[in-house]
Amino acid sequence: MAYIDYYKILGVSKNASEADIKKAYRKLARKYHPDLNPNDKISEKKFKEINEANEVLSNKENRKKYDQYGEHWQHAEAYEQSKQQNQHKQTYQDASGGYSEEDFSDFFESMFGGRASRSSRQVKFRGQDYNAELQLELKDVYETHKRTLTVNNKNIRITIPAGVENGQIIKIKGHGGPGVNGGPRGDLYIQFSILNHTQFKRDKDNLYITVDLDLYKALLGGELMVDTFNGKVKLNIKPETQNGTQVKLKGKGFPKYKKEGQFGDLYITYQIKTPTNLSEKEKALIKELQKLR
Image (cartoon, rainbow, N blue to C red; front, top):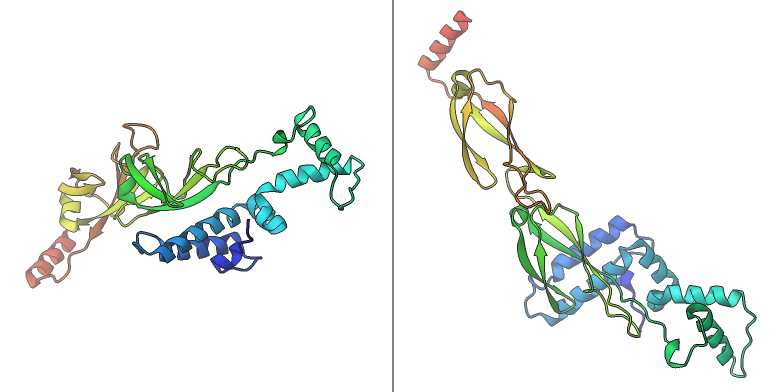
């Protein structure tokens, strides 16, 4: 495996912080994403390299192995095991200066038990885990749906449960890198970036919204149509409602993650709007009201 400078690919230094790496990855991933560069083979290759670099450098353990072993970082554990075994055994070198046949036999015997044959000496290594970021709108995760992702030129059909949160990570088993010497494939970890361009503020499975309430309806009471996430509802406004009053609509919030049919609540805060551009008659009536109070 040829050495690939993952730091250079992301355009960061070797002492870059986790935040620096994440920021660089997101910027480049947006720039070279296949959806924004259809049929562009160069961008497709660049996007693949960016994801590969992020998969290694965004993981503390993988980054540590990469910094120490370079292109051999995936086999770091085997190197460490071999090193520890040789510290407890007296080894000798053959005429060519390498380890003798007996050294390797002893090493594999201590790891797997019994005398190892030539065919069994190849250690199986689990494949590399992949990490990917998926950007969705808040409305996209209000209902469970399926989506096709392209990871390393392979289409993967996944189910996205309703109620997924921003920053949440899910694991797709067996969709990572291929194993070495017949080892199992790694896993795919998908981190969700949920963009909210709605008028609602989300806090887990609860939603919050501020609605305008005219002064007269606040004083005298009445009915008001307000938005929920999936439609409108009619509310009864109590007379003498104060500015900042909050009401709760039970079950009108966001779906609870992996709890079919269960929802959080919607909290509505009233913001009383003072009338402007008053006519002379209106001003006179308000003055009369002021005298009565």
